[in-house]
Length: 507
Image 1 (cartoon, rainbow, N blue to C red):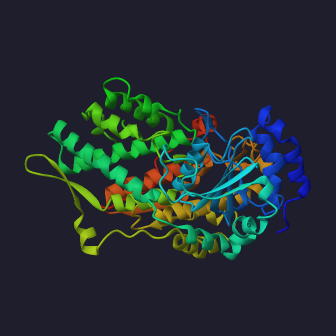
Image 2 (tube, rainbow, N blue to C red):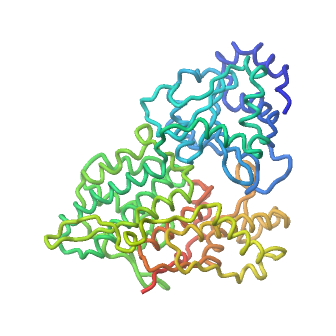
């Protein structure tokens, strides 16, 4: 790739004092300098090729502002729809070299998304971070920084930048080779998050067993699984802008935490009408939860859980946490079960079948993608959404935590969107029950109603492990809501009250 235009650098240099002192903002530096810089690296920044949403080179996040911080990376660079690195942009007035908050923000994004490298830049400065080390709020700005350049270095160091971050470098594998040489001791997000929710399970198990002496072992396992799943769901929804940010954190103030938490659960039941929150008898639903509304859980236990779920204490950025990472964490989490002793004390043990098999195994995403493309891909090729595809039933008879079903569902979402965009999308968006709509960024998206219709119509799963079933339902529900925010959800939920996904356990 050719080096950046010298006029671009000269213009920035000439106006730098004004940019740093005046009202020059992040959006302006992105459009005038950062976008052209990465176009010189071969990236289709504005999607001139007209690729479908699933295959765009660059995703520009909507940028939900919460507490002064952007809740989504400014740029996500992808190849074939797969994330490769994030870029977080700042205005020139922010000192990239020393600003530890900006570095921590970027590292949380990259670490949570399990990306090896990501970039922080205001164009004046260009910093590359190794995102495989768990970020800590007290880290200096230089922590895990592996490359730092000034705008005056771009032309001289262009070959180095190009050999790592150009689209050509990604396709040739140079990016992966470079990141591999930089890898040191790491604490990746899946391992850390697994430790976190295992700790939740332990403190909840001991407390619930103590305060609820009449619970059976099966009821105890159910109650803890549901409580953890619901907390994770609501917390992810907060970071995605679907729920009001900080509601769980606010529960730390005052008493009767579980009672107030359950008020949020009941609101979620009314809002999402899903199997994750189901506390009253409804038509076409055989089972509903009468157990967890009656639980007693001490305040200090729940406050402990909520403590490390928010910025700046939390290393997690749930808005970018991949569905497959959540599945991998849960797959290992479900390898253990809570057993009650004769004195009604909770003990956590590895499941006999897991112990016998020598551990838990999760199907890698690339294998799932290959199977899906070779099976479902061939079945839908050349078809229309109203024909054979509407009658297609995809069943995983041992779904586990849902890796195959999530992959199959994502494929169908991408396929349906592409079909609708190629078939007069403006007209389809104006019908009484539209299946697509245009976001504020003028991108076509499937409505929540359509995403859930596809899930209920096409995706089925069975598993002997009831806990695994609940995890699959959680992951699929999060996938339904992916890319939405509170406003779009509220506008669509009137159309959204449908039965829970068809995932069940064998008896």
